[in-house]
Image (cartoon, rainbow, N blue to C red):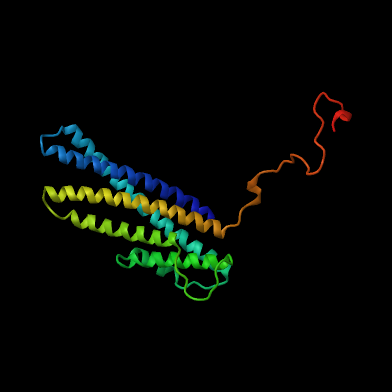
Length: 235
């Protein structure tokens, strides 16, 4: 789980950067649409804009899909670690987590619920939460849930909006694409926080990574003699 988290975090960071770049390309396209109302645009400018929008859009959503696949795999491993540590049985099977993330509509609710369960079990295993009552998700989990649902809704709206015709529909579609890319970036960054918090709670710190200590002085002992001075001169 800890080894996979590094790959997940790297993929999420790349997705976040690509989302910002794709939103910038969509913003440039919108500016060109505004300029085209008062005059013709150069063929090279339009071609470069189309190439940037197409390339960045495809690469961004491919990395977004890869981040989702790796994230689901990481969640499954994290659930196993958290439940073994807390000596509990999972509330749902792994296939239910995968299916709940893949099915449209259902994936608005299941991933957030799974993440809230993972947080609860993790805190129980660390002894920071009792099993009494039904605990509420933390603000970080609620924020992630909101970003995830908003990103999906914006993505679906953008795809459906692309079926419309007309110049105004095209301009609105460019704005929706930019908003979707930014929502994807925000969701990726919040996901990095969630993965980092979970790994810190489940994986104990490695003492060997702290480096070797070095004795500076012993408390209560006299300071060492300075170079060039005899030992009896030190008080």
